[in-house]
Image (tube, rainbow, N blue to C red):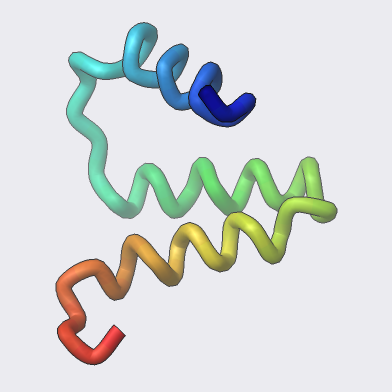
Length: 58
């Protein structure tokens, strides 16, 4: 198990029943980067990956 799996599992356990919009998620990611700018590149990569999931060229 990777260290990050624990955070993902906690997210699913605590918030897994909720429905959120992508706009809400984008706001939370922006808030996170504002408070933790050292993670900007990782959050940017995750957001780009999510945005392009259905793009056959990526």
